[in-house]
Length: 210
Image (cartoon, rainbow, N blue to C red; front, side, top):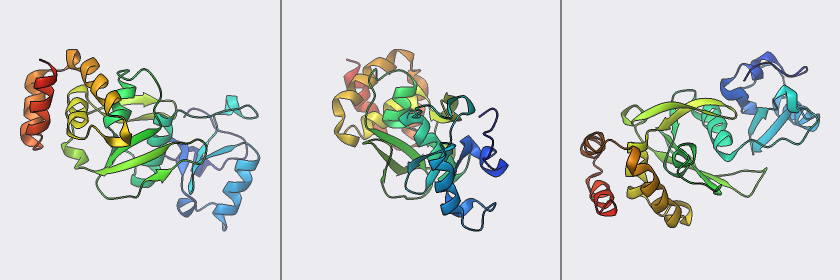
């Protein structure tokens, strides 16, 4: 995120996607108290319990709410580290513009478990799925908080077919599969299915494609 807000420590401004957890901030002796103070001043925005992101300098003093995809990316960066997580499933479909309307659940792939996280700034949740991030087919994409890894259309289609009921949004998952299929390389999809044991999901995709 370019620039930084006056009063926000460089440690926070330089953090991946300018998002931090209190326990990782070394600038302050009592980081949670100080982060809450910066939030009250409008310099930080609390995404969820224990996660704060820097408000863009141009938006200080104005209403600002990051997208759910950006919030998920920032939380992923703070929780797992840059490059050690990926936005996937419905969230990847949103970033690939395969789901036109906003949904109330974001999905993050990471190498370890984490409980579902409820956002404090809106009625939405972030779900974390244990995946080998290095094995996923991903690309770098931009969110409003910054760049992060996002599953490719081929990987996203297979993940949607594999777990279509996440967030009780099966209709959205099916619609996203239809929207993404024309962009997908079928040979690449077959290879992903083979190496990630997603054969049944690939069969479902082929049936969906008619």
